[in-house]
Image (cartoon, helix red, strand yellow):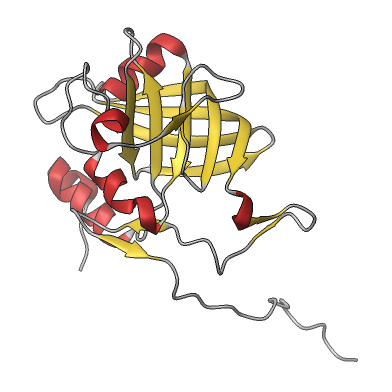
Length: 207
């Protein structure tokens, strides 16, 4: 089966992409509105892609009715945001925060999520998230006027203590249970893991 991208509608292209690029990590992003309301929203067009500087990127599209999402409005004003990864205990709250909330109602308050002060940015973080990265906007890219790619530079990290071996700089994978995005309202657990021996590459030719 084969498609030319230009022969598909935007919705059809979205379905072809999101049905197969699976699972996707989810950025659970907090920002602060002009009146101090804390917004939290998930974005699954997301990943990290550099360590020097530590950069992440996620895409913010318009709402179905054409309104600009609060996350984008807040980032454009302040240049700051906090990215969290949700694990299984917080997956439902993360999903519920994707609903349509007016700007004067903060998702953390409505959903009963505990906030904690960040260290290097003014935006609060979700206190119970397993991993958090405080970010300042590094660059934004406008895509066709209806989507913004937000690149953030991570300037401070918070990690749940029991998940991290500080001496080895390794995560305890038996204790860390992040969720991934599938498509529509479907998510996946990430506990069914496979490990292979180190790849050796091409064998040297024998004399």
